[in-house]
Structures are given as C-alpha cells and as structure tokens.
Image (cartoon, rainbow over all chains, first blue to last red):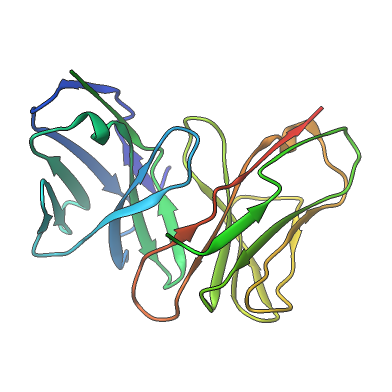
Length: 109
Length: 113
C-alpha cells in the first residue's frame, strides 16, 4: 500500500476557476504535512506547509484532517501559471518524507 | 533560490560503467537525501544522511551507494550501471530541526543504454 495516495488527474480548468485536490496518507503517526509543486521536468518546490488548524497563503488554502488522514489543497482564481503537478508530502520518523505521485493541473485560457 | 547543485544534469552511458552523481549544498544543512523519480511517478527515497559519516538506506532498494565525508557534499555512486537504473535522481537537503522544507537540486537525468 502506498504511503500517500493522490488522484493523478489531470484537472483541466479554465482561468479563474476554483479547484481542490485531496490526498490521503496511511501512517497515523505522521508528523508534518506539505504541498509541493513540481513543474514539468523540474525539481519539486515547497508550496506550503499544512497545519492542523488549516492555513491560507494568498489564493491557496490547505486543510488537514488527522482523524480521516486526509489533506486538501484549494486554489482560488486559478492562473495559467498554476499549471503544474501538485505533490502531497507527509513526514514521519522525524527525517523521512513520503511523496504522493502528484495531481496534474492544467489551467486553460 | 536554494543553493543545492547537482552534476551532471544529464548523463547517457553504456551498461557496466561506474558513475557518480554529485550533490553539493552551501546552506550548511545537516540532513541530505537522494530520491529517485520515474516520469509521472512519486519520488522514492533511496538514501539519506543525518550528518557527516552518517548514511542510511531509504525504503526503495537501490544498488547505489553514498558517502558523507563533508557536510556540503553527498555523492551517489553506481558501480555498474544497468538499463534498469535509468531514471531521474534528485538530491535534497534540509536544516536540522522541525522545519520541514526540503530544498531540491535540479536533478540528474540518467540514461543507461
């Protein structure tokens, strides 16, 4: 069983749309949670950490549900530049990070 | 921008060759990692290091080896490359402590013929 599961997509949305991604993780002892963004053939880069109380960074909102072992990312007012693959990442055992296979987003004009 | 560098960016070699993928960071980070990623697939941890002279194997079995003689340097070596080693190799580092951010290099794309 995979540590982190994501819908691979692709999600094809028009500019200005709101889009939500979800992911689930298998280890209840997971300590930290993140969303990374990976552009085609590039390295992953941190988009935002995910806190238990939920957190927002501009157009991006992340939520964590520990009871259901579920993490979400909401993108409002999508831009063409948001087109990328979004990776759900979970950390446990202090130093091990587990990556989902990513959800691909295509924002179209 | 993260100060973590990988060389070579692209490498095409024949079966049986020995290769070393270089990774260096100038941020003074204790923890360093090697991940392997195939197209459209998740990153798999193959090696990590807590600091100098500390290395551990990750969850994905790998025939590669690593060393950590200096804080800033974490090379990965394949003694005898095979076509099954064809993949992208991503090096990452992070600072000691609870902050989670991994900083990645641009990756080394290896093709073994």
